[in-house]
Amino acid sequence: MIPFSPPYIDDDVKNEVLDSLNSGWITTGPKVKALEKEVSKITGIENVLCVNSATSAMMLMLHWFGIGKGDEVIIPAYTYCATALAVMHLGAKAVMIDVTKDFCIDTDKIRKVITPRTKAIIPVDIGGYPCDYDEIHDIVNHDEIKKLFISVNETQRMLGRIFVMADSAHSIGAVYKGRQSGTLCDATVFSFHAVKNVTTAEGGAICLNLPGKFNNEELYKWLRLLSLNGQTKDAFTKSQGGSWKYDIVYPGFKINLNDLCAAVGLAQIRKYSNDLLIKRKKIFEKYDKGFGKYHWAELPPALTNEKETSYHVYLLRIKGITEDQRDRIIEEISKREVAVNVHFTPLPMLKIFKERNYDINDYPVSYDNYSREITLPVYPQLSDDDTEKVIQSVIESYDEVIDN
Image (cartoon, rainbow, N blue to C red; front, side):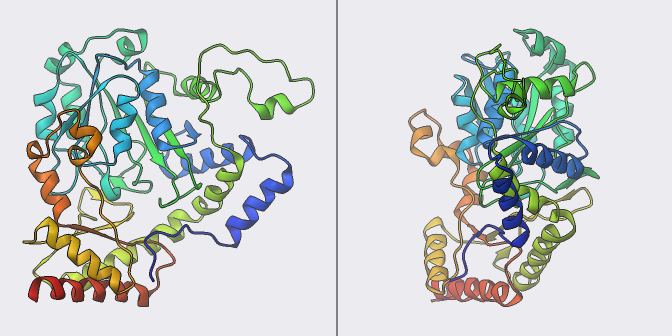
């Protein structure tokens, strides 16, 4: 069986974790700080905070901006549930809009749903392919839109417009108009979950890129404090001789990343740009070559004059099929010992959102993308023979279901 997304664990990872164990320090400490610095190197963003998940990271930033009951946050209907749940957990309403054929949020629809209650927009880079960020910034900075924005705290008054936070869970290493993912919004959130391009088993990172009125370094320090229960000293600092005294200055959260998890990601990210990401791209290129000759294969967006994906997963769509036929094709692929997936079931199709009156019929492009989509594995350990087996399994399965 070719697995869908096994973690990349080599000797460097094992040695980094062992180093952490041998150090006697396993919670938030030097490994976390080192990982933050490595994310800074990749993105060019100076202030990066690592926490225990991308979901926590999004909740922390929305909380910092003062988003709560009665507020609205615009998100795409085509995303993982965490994007919406981060909004809902704060008491705000997730305002869903449709996506385009490239899986990105439809910027033409954003302006139509903005109201005086709109406090934030969360674009999502599905599969690692960047959204149209310049268009989003043009919208939130338009004079008419800024006049609609109602500030209820000092942070919102300082920004003076809708807050833009990228859900870039998939897109570390992606590029938009020559700029790295992480630099494209007020804040960007990466995921280091087990199946991501860089993993810490569980974890996430916030890249702070707020405009001139804000001090991103001071904000980093404040958010770090908030991630540790609002405590003025972390455990590592307290462990140093004579440094035990601390205070709790804010009702914070317990969402810090630990050094054992950070060690896994630290070993990976050091070879990410010059090794692991390149291997992912080559697998994409093999898939493109393998499926490009078939009229029924709709290849995923990956590389244009303006955008380059992070090559997270391969979102293959099959032309002219139904959802049921897609499901049967997946069953046939599984019979050939290849694990595939679907990214994602649109939110309005899930029980929790249907109960809140979201209707998939309002999001036709999201449904069309989903109903024909099969996610193929992409990871550095995938050999040429494995990649060829994936390609042949999809072709044979299509023939089995459609031609027969």
